[in-house]
Amino acid sequence: MRTLSSPILWLLIMSMAACTPNQTPSEYRGGWAGTIQESNPFSFSIDLELNATDPWVRFTGKDTVTILPLQAEDSKYLVARFEDQLTFRLDTNGGNLTAFVHAGHHLSHLPLEPTGPNAWSGHWDLLIEGTTTSPTLYLSMDSLGQDQYGVSTFFKEPSYHYMWINDFLLQEDRFLSFREIRSNIQFSGELKESRIDLTLQFLLEKTDVAMQRMPYDEWDIGGYATTARELPPEQPFADLIRAVENDTLERTHAVVIAQGGEVILEEYFDNFLSSTPHDTRSMSKSFASTALGLAIEDGLISSENELMMDYFSEGYPEVDWSEGKDRITLHHLLSMTSGLDGNEGHYQNQEDWTAAVLNSEMMHAPGDTGRYRSGNPHLIGPILTSVLENERLEFYLHRRLFGPLGITNYRLQTSHEDVPYFGGGWFFTPMDLVKFGQLYLNQGQTQAERLLPKAWVEKSFLQYNRLEGTKDNNAYGYLFWHYTYPVKGKGIVSIEGRGAGGQYLFIIPELDMVAAITSGNYRNGKIFQPERIMEEFILPKLVK
Image (cartoon, rainbow, N blue to C red; front, side, top):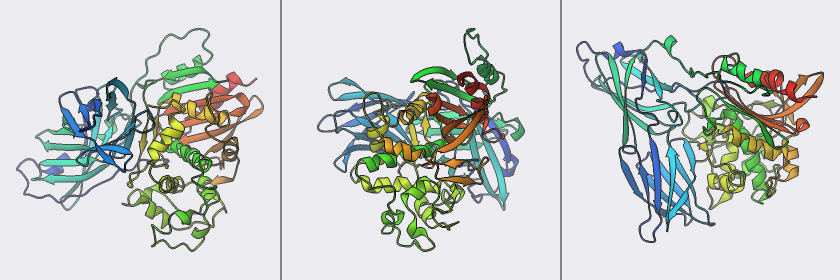
């Protein structure tokens, strides 16, 4: 995921037939909007039957049923596929079933409950947008010259699901089709006299939306309202809640605070619920640090001082390892000091993201300085995949991290290489983010067990460099930010995970506190608003 902006992918197509009188594609240039009439489209009940002869998984939508056979894969997983649109993968080893649904670039963990002998069930929503309201869709159609056209689409709230269009096709200057590659929803439609009729399809389920013309300046992106409510007089954070409700702190979606292991504030706004996983954008990078620490603890990797090239030189023989690339270590990837110019805007437009990062130019020698580049944590994903051998990375993360923390309602973004993408775009509920932060506050210990070595937590929180080009020239650890808040004449040190749009995880050991703030401030200049919330509305209540 980009740190400060989201990609819009324009795909080109030459008109394939003569124009229909009074109805040419050029007339449809500009903005369009429509609301899907049914709430929560593409919501599925999932049932498993694991008999010895023909195991299957069944997806039951509102109107259709899709039954897929489960087949063995790598002697460890049972897998079902629907064309190129969906993969269901199940691990039956170890007593408890673990399942993931993979659609496009989203890999969703699926909690399962037993319903009978050899039978289990669960529930899965393809779209987070629409679980509480009918989703609004925006579409832009532009002429790109010489009878070439492109489209881009957006949901009303991009924090739910931001869209990336591919395979655009316009036939007979009238019929259009394209695919949204993050969810693998297939779109088809027709240019009508004064509207665009679209049909969205996933599996066998379909839903329709009539798009009416709407100028771009009338689009209401992220415009859900929060209704003010009665607050108890003893609520210490009433001023914070009121400032969110009256839009002084606009597009704040959730604030959850725990101190001393107890939740002292849990508030949700703008149509978000406690059960809504939120796109954490680049905050997900911090999980790469955790995953590598777990791999070292498990003996899969000897230490963070191993050379990066040892994991890639055989699989990527075309890479030129000169100019210092042969000296890059895992430590350099974790601390953003590799020197690689692994910019998302470049490598996410390539078929092989890893090759693009490895072949990027060196900005400086390894260890010389810190430059924030998503390519650094991205490389940790392929490295972990290579050492896990017979276990997929998402199942390892669930077994070693998310499962023990009680985190079950989440989805991971994947790269083009079909592995979890550590550059960003993972979805968690704010309360689950607090659980993750509490693990670090407790130096790797949960109530039941030690997950991370204390030494790894301490290494993660050290200051290895300052990030050039950032707003505050922040000190940086192992994929954690450092910032000091001036409060009541004191400097309160916070260790943070951060993501574009205002996604923040605060770990403040001095106050025995963890807080998560999620937001939707992507292009309005307020991505740092959570820092203001922490400094002006939270810390003054807690600092003595």
